[in-house]
Image 1: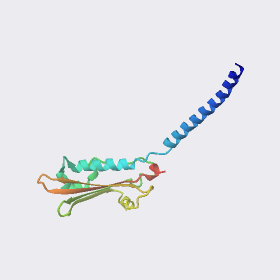
Image 2 (image 1 turned 45 degrees about the vertical axis):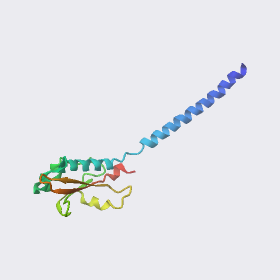
Image 3 (image 1 turned 90 degrees about the vertical axis):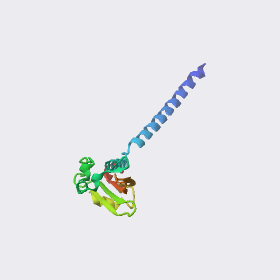
Image 4 (image 1 turned 30 degrees about the vertical axis):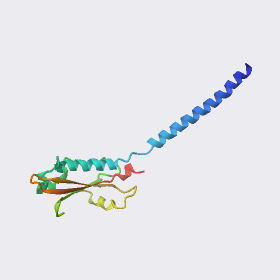
Length: 167
């Protein structure tokens, strides 16, 4: 019976070592997972593209207002978009978004409408995609108008915000 008490003391030391290792492992995993910022630029570009697509075409029919001159001058207002960002990293002085909308005739590929809003310098950084470059999203879809004329709609969305999202 005397050896049983000595054995309990040895097991309790190992028990504390195992508990310490498990706690250290869990702490390391939590810090490594939550220690980096989330890069949501791709999600922002998707939302921006979807909002413009919904504004341009409803139920497969092209919004007739797009073909007017008033729409082309105010894409942000007509689609209820806001490119304002928080005042972090001096973002107020340089825009963090760029959007380009092209509407082409389906058969002839002639541009009917070309509208862009935001920082046009961002589109130059789309080709050499790297970790520190802006996130670019290029989408196309087809639509018809009330007279069954067919159109191809191209939307390019660019989100910068590299200082906050990329580390």
